[in-house]
Amino acid sequence: MNYGYGMYFDPTFILVIIGALISGIASMNVKSTFNKYSKIRNYRGLTANQVAEQILHSAGIYDVTVERIRGNLTDHYSPNEKVLRLSDSVYGQTSVAAIGVAAHECGHAIQHQEEYAPLKLRSASVPLANIGSWISWPVILIGLLLGYTQLAQFGIFLFTFVVVFQLITLPVEFDASARALKILDNNHILEGDEHRGATKVLKAAALTYVAALFATILQLLRLVLIVNGRRRND
Image 1 (cartoon, rainbow, N blue to C red):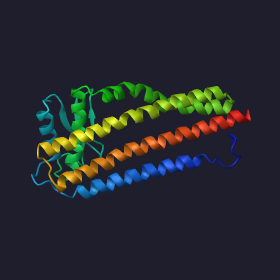
Image 2 (image 1 turned 180 degrees about the horizontal axis):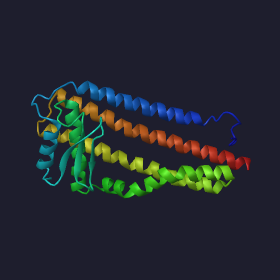
Image 3 (image 1 turned 90 degrees about the vertical axis):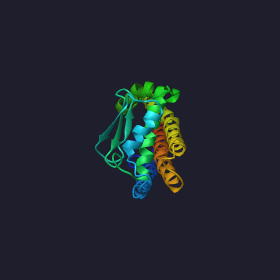
Image 4 (image 1 turned 60 degrees about the vertical axis):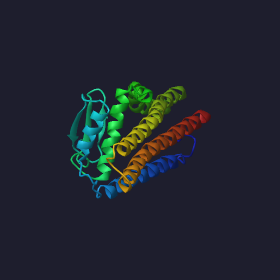
């Protein structure tokens, strides 16, 4: 299909490739960093779930349950359920990496308790992000196929909801990591090389969010170029 860039080759696809490479590199980095520090046991012999409960209680949070969930690095905090879920690679583990991840999720629980504004904004933007993720592509494709440029542009507008959501996510994730590292240090849970190891794990994890945002922005740029190219040919 010709969108103004030739019949058989769309040069804007290079933007997708760049985004995929950046995301792939960030993903491999976090996995390799986690694997490296998952082999280093914390000197106190605490498990990640024990640390999570200790952090929550020290913050005055007693209504959040710590549960185990299947998978690798599928850890998350559910504010609606008030459940902190730790993956198989974290729950029950004594590694520096596991404790860093558990503390990070506790950071989200503390954000929720303190009504941290960016977290509230992210939660409120979830429905719009879902709309942008699910509806934008069909709208754009229908607009291009039928030659309705304005419809395709509306689809691009919907896709920006995804970009905005990922942009809002960055301060939430960085703040949770900062809280986690501060708590681990102040409570003497991790010290010295152990604390530095947890810092590297959380920094690598944060970079995956940055990479995802960059890849999505490149995808948005590609859509704009395609639609504008089609409009010039109409």
